[in-house]
Image 1 (cartoon, rainbow, N blue to C red):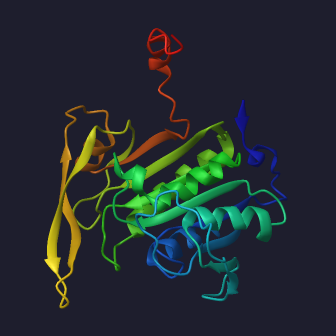
Image 2: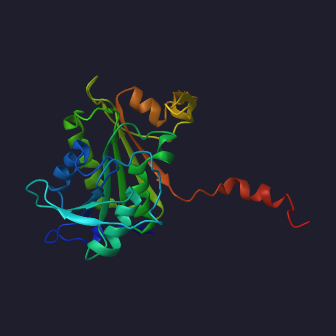
Image 3: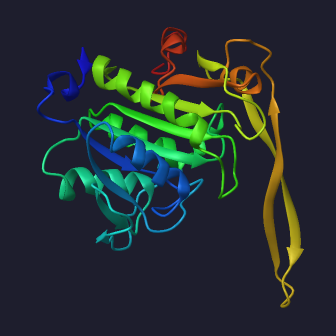
Length: 268
């Protein structure tokens, strides 16, 4: 069964699109994504009031949340700045701000990679996953350029195409799309590759220092290591100047291991 209210949307009724991110509501990436979505539907923005990168799927439990309508540009979208995490933004949008469930949620465009293992830590993708949990087709977009003034222009037609396809086709229950765009300041985009998540991870180090009071503190650092030589991965696609599209599921069950685990006879 596919979930997509957009499949029922007529030409007379524009799809309702929720836009969010983790870099903050003023980031150039989300402003670009908003402009693209304004050409495709009715847009409502609910995004963090400050950067929330690396927050993963964190939610706010022990403090208050605020969502305030803001006016950043000429619209036509409605925008709300939220004090919480990206996942909080989606939750409060669905429960308090929107009059109905959106036809689509798009998150990004993130300043930096969310390929391979980065999807686990990503606030951008966690917002998309939160929407997916709610039965909303969702896509996370990222550009492999961490600079504030990154060039998002070459990615626009590809993002529009992907969104149009999802609005038309819908997505399976439990699936969201993780879309990463190569650094377009270096080479031109060759096209789109449907990929799998590469086996890659961060080899982390901590830079240990002392503050003026003599107390130890740490800065997290490290390097990214790709352990996967496959040519069907997101890392290969990006290295070769293709946009990678990875279907991501939020059911983390290792289904293939259930049968073997039952053979352990844990009740004995």
